[in-house]
Image (tube, rainbow, N blue to C red; front, top):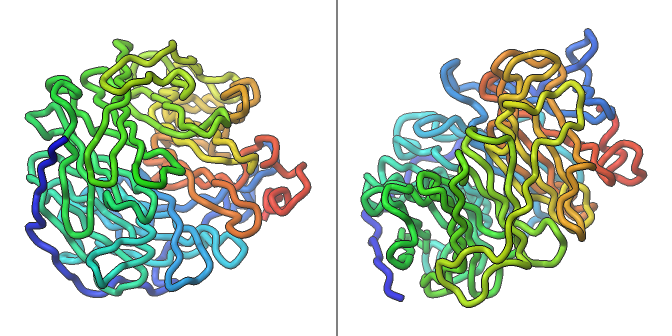
Length: 472
């Protein structure tokens, strides 16, 4: 299959990234249900929640916490650590926190800030944030511990790497395709590049996808008709975890066409469409996650909504994926997961359950669990305070009856907790698992739930995991 290459229009170097510690006015806030504001955030099972307030450099108008990215870094062969990057959308700063480092959590102080001074990054950088462990820029240079901040207005991105003090900016895609509205990294070492980016305004609004290979931004050509007219393919996408070898598996939404496209990208950049999932339900394909939640080793497609229609997500099991390729329908009806009524203080009706979804192994059992945001949920009688739901995966698929819900202990009107959800690695070298975080744009904060309350991730469980769940 042919592909169209957009050569790199520019590769720009900027001044050094600020890596000073403690220069921010931001402190980690441990919110309490009791009167003492310095205690932990008690969430029904005594699990501590770290609340990160708006960072220095952001204004009161910036939707701090509306963009989140968790990723792993290892620079120069050092032990792996994780990072949590937080932004507020195009043209705003980006702040990076250590997540798991030196055998413990370290969210108390930011590691760095960037894109906060004119000329640091491309003007619209920050639409999406994508962690890139290794970026082979040329035959003789590979950067490590990188964060990509996409810049749709410039058709490119800025790259902040811990192995290099310079911020590098790359352009090349047309400025009118909204490149980088969404994106995700591919497994290190694949010849096809380091990331897949959505471009929902490409092809006259039908949308499209691109890949980043070295210093080039290259369109991934899909068969005609894959993206219906004005469907905006590329609004959200997810690359399946564990993708390795010679190809990457991708699920991408076309929300204005009610479609999710599942495709595979080979090492040479050619794409094979594996399925097209269509549903006329209101809000279908507002968000997507692509991960294994039933333990069969193959990723399942989890489709959320756009904050419209029913409060539910739809799970398309990998066992029913069509065989033979092409824009074929899924082989079985999806499992519909409605908002679980597991907390009497959280009202599911009208909660926008499913506006964002993410998959990660939260309980350390080797199978992915589902994180679902419900930013319009009424909490303790407070309108639109928002909540986050954790639904465990297992051999039989997701189990909503064992789900847990988490909120801020002192909810506020229009906090919108769960408008964005993300998972980031922890327990590296000890008890590997993922930790969930959620944006609370109305509060201008990010909540990181160190314990979800799922079996294997609660204080009652005896292990280093149980130990870390106690109030801190």
